[in-house]
Length: 137
Image (cartoon, rainbow, N blue to C red):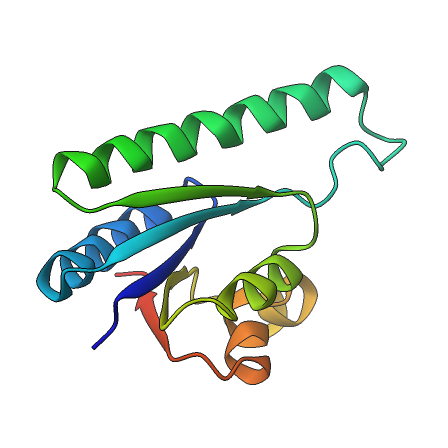
């Protein structure tokens, strides 16, 4: 059974749906979750002022705190992890210590997917940890 579940999020509605499903699984299995928010090194871009990087970090912490509180309210132990690296890199690294990844996909298709890429797709093709993908409805 899946006892250690990784739930990467960007705080979007899709991320909230993945959280909901991940918490259901963790509660049923008597497991725990790790909530991961990856910021693609917000301070490294010269295009972003320092204040913007600080706001991005604050927003990420806020999302992690909200999701963690939701997990605790449902009786699921939760850890949080804020990574300042590319989301794919962060997820693949964190996945090494987990039994399952539950993540959402924006379900982009065609040229939008080619131009924007897909974090979920890259994780799927480069990770040996089982992955449950929550699709946009």
